[in-house]
Image 1: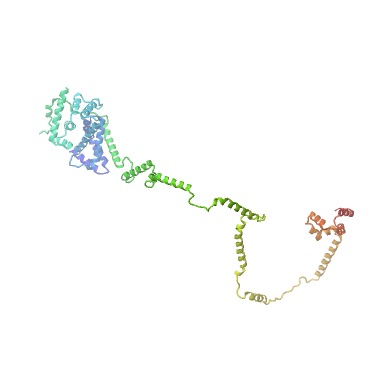
Image 2: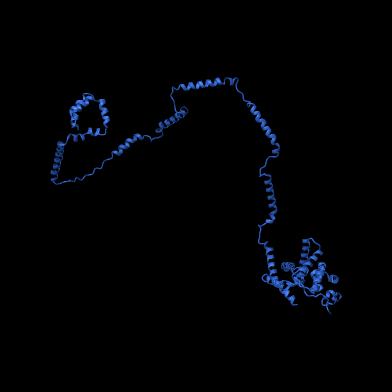
Length: 184
Length: 304
């Protein structure tokens, strides 16, 4: 409830010209980590995540004046971040002219060499298993497993029905379990 | 009733996944989130500035609207320079007809050179030309000889007619000058009367006041004494004045003083005769020739 109030306060301040910067500053401080980790789990590399997260906030700055209260500010920003992630991954694929599977392999390699990854072997294997999934399944799994988001919220972010999301999530879990068992 | 999200029993079906720690395995650099919102804010403002000002660069009004037209003009100019047209044009088919036109011009020039331009001369003109020229030369020489070796200024005869006309015009002007002025009728008849009338005016006589300058009788004796002294002084100085001083004061001396001696000698040699010698000697005796003797003078005159 308090979060909702704060969102309303941020939006109210943003509508005023003299408090717009203050409102945006509050918005970034409140959601920067959630947005960053959502992006980071998708692009794996910290520097890439940093760029995509900043791009996400730029889009939020440009579009916040047109934000409608029929959606939660949180899910709205997640949708923007998700679109930025997908755009980034598609550009990466087009830039290197390599198949998406090879992109996943490259991301797995960067995960192994990443300075900013301190997970254990099981966590690393889980990330490698996630990289074998399609982007949309990975998104559903991440938001469900790590962010504990409701299917309705994920539906708002991805624009997919709750039933489809449930099927996608369970399919993703089966693939991950299979991957973890097969590599043991 | 537990919600779906709170129910983690589904993990029991996936034991491998259940064993993986749910904690976030990813890390970020120290202080990353402290700087993230600052960098995000900066980027947002920078992006806003870029959207509004296009990185601060501006273009003139309607630049992009006019850009295609300007570009087309530039291309046309460049093409013109490349073709070296430079804006000059030639009539249609100029270069195609140029060779034929030049050939026609050459033919005309050659035809003119070969013919005499359809001009003709009298029969035997060139045969008689030398004789005619010689005759003309003889006539000119004869005319020049009739001048009696007198010469006149250059273009004298050419200007003579004009000078005569100018002289006639001047004479006519001078002769008619007084006729251009008129006087009132009977002016001269009345002129004498008018003058006489002015001069015949009665003279106003005024009674003059006569005043005696000196009333004393002493003035009479003083005036008589001065008169006697003036006469006496004159006689006294004339009596004791030398002949040379008298001669120097004479008219003949003053008149001849400005005449050079050479002119006097020439005059005497031309106009003197023997009869003048005694007179000259008499005059010499009265002149400043005291150092010469009469014999010397006689001898000089006889020899000269």
